[in-house]
Amino acid sequence: EAQVTQNPRYLITVTGKKLTVTCSQNMNHEYMSWYRQDPGLGLRQIYYSMNVEVTDKGDVPEGYKVSRKEKRNFPLILESPSPNQTSLYFCASSFAASGGGYTFGSGTRLTVV
Amino acid sequence: AQSVTQLGSHVSVSEGALVLLRCNYSSSVPPYLFWYVQYPNQGLQLLLKYTTGATLVKGINGFEAEFKKSETSFHLTKPSAHMSDAAEYFCAVSVGYGSGSRLTFGEGTQLTVNP
Image (cartoon, rainbow over all chains, first blue to last red; front, side, top):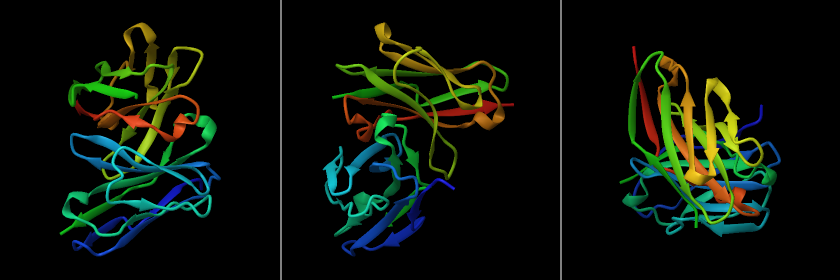
């Protein structure tokens, strides 16, 4: 089944403790992206990648890191999480030619206390 | 830079009534436009998209949207609402070569369908 898989689905952590949210897609998509969703703000792009080893900042990149060493994986790293990073996170992927027709993962609900 | 405005954070309709969700975009170049739907505790699902060609776009679940360049709008409609349409709907835009990576979303519209 074609899908974007994120793990974990739920995570509660403490301020300052490094964490990684994994994302993997099995559709051979070039584009991958991370978004955070907050009430009243819609989805905001954190980072995106147009292909292996090509990543760039989105609209809200502060406090996050990403890497794209393989085409299928695009992990999101929070080196020192803070409470304002409590949010619902989505990974998404698409073919370059789709112009933005992303396939989304099921989401990771992160709580930083 | 592109942007999207969705008019109305909450829309309520009766079952069987017309659904109209409004979306206006801002872009200096021809955009690609999208509508996504999010059901509770799920990720986003693509409803429909406009890239080029016919301005009336049909999507899944009986939804359609019309690209109106003169009005910079891409409103989503469905002739007859069903209870299962209750969800949050997001309009989104991308522009330019390689832009598919830079998808900008509106703030979302929560649709409630009353029996």
